[in-house]
Length: 87
Image 1 (cartoon, rainbow, N blue to C red):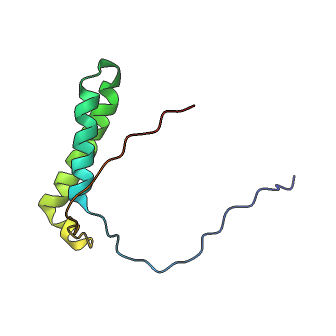
Image 2 (image 1 turned 90 degrees about the vertical axis):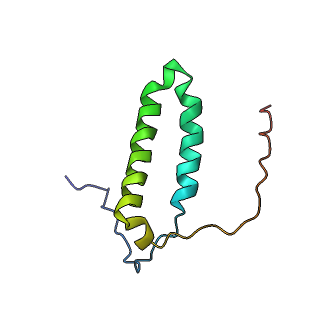
Image 3 (image 1 turned 180 degrees about the vertical axis):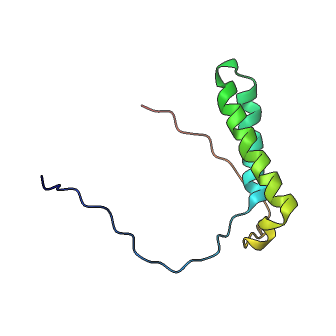
């Protein structure tokens, strides 16, 4: 039987260092986890985020984050806009 599905071929792209600010990722995950912690229905999700936070901490301690091209963001402030109600 001839399959009409062929494996996807990945293009070979040059590897680039990721510019990920782990401090911002950590702060965002801490914010989300603190909200989830208050909801008994979301304890497993809260635990999963704690695992991600522990991995970020491990990267910071091992120095891998410094080698990953992470840079401190250069901004002076942020403004969050409320979500529009769905209609």
